[in-house]
Image 1 (spheres, helix red, strand yellow):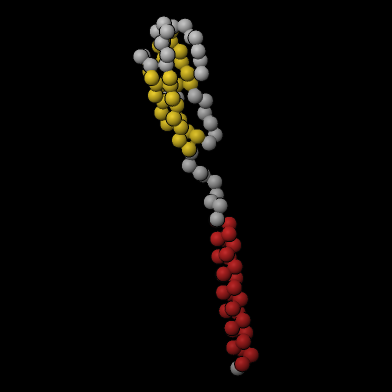
Image 2: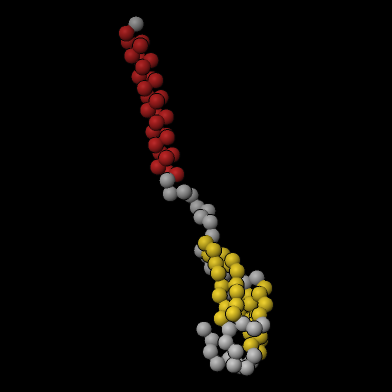
Length: 96
């Protein structure tokens, strides 16, 4: 928040954040122009301006939290299936 600013043009830029992406900016002011994540406000004497920067959460790009348990369960199922197949063949050979 800035107070007691003299009349003139002021540019405010939102810094990038690792978890959020800039979406839009809007201002309650007589004369303002947005350019990407920056806004320039031309204040007149005694004017109050309020600018709001709106961000969106970036999509999660890492591995999914349940991927590893599903991979382990799948591998276990494959190994158990192979074990049962081998055990069944061995048992069949013993009975013959």
